[in-house]
Length: 123
View 1 (spheres, rainbow, N blue to C red):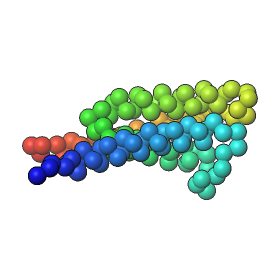
View 2: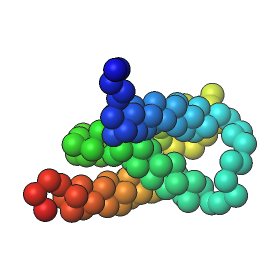
View 3: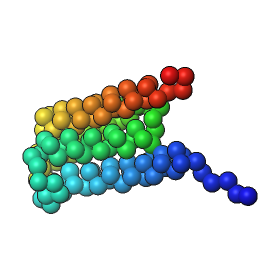
View 4: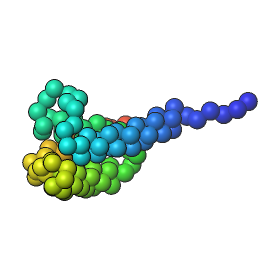
């Protein structure tokens, strides 16, 4: 009889794959001179949605690495804003966009941390 991967391992692997795909999508959309409107929402809401999704996927993929995820997402958001200052991209890097990224990622990761403590063995 063959053993199959546990559902938790499969979910983590899928979440990891989706995180990297979503990260690439976010980067490409952030650097396009005239990106298509994917969600009919303000720029800040789009930033918050993107980083909430990234944080959620990362928390599912690597639930014991929440601080590293937070720092990585903060850096990723900062890198995007820095790259948007390149004149040939015809984009504008804004500190307010980075703050929206940080706020959304932080909120999702705090919920993930609280949920993780609540469901930890022995509780």
